[in-house]
Amino acid sequence: MIPDDAGDQAGHQNPRESKGKPGTRAPHIWLEQDGKQISTLDLFGKNFALLAGPQGTRWSESGAEAATGLGIDLDIHEIDARGPKVPGGSFAEAYWDRALRCGSRSP
Image (cartoon, rainbow, N blue to C red; front, side):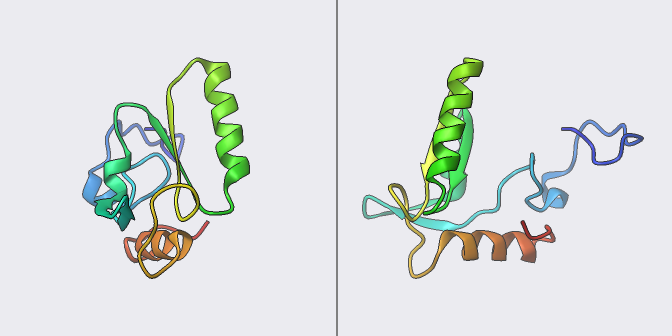
């Protein structure tokens, strides 16, 4: 974890207090994939993960290129595009609504 304040020497933040800030645990949202209900948290495994919305193809491409250049494994999930769907809504609205309700700032 890299603190926002250079003077902050905390090496750990309680997951219940991080509230979806970048670099912390992602907010939970129900998704649908292959007819099954999954959580956004199910998309995070042992690799770095990139979640992109339906218009995030350039993010996905750039992320894949950067991961290759760095020699790291990156799982890319294009929500509401070629990947899991948010039932009855949009990923951006659902994800940021959840993050905002948890106390995070808007993008």
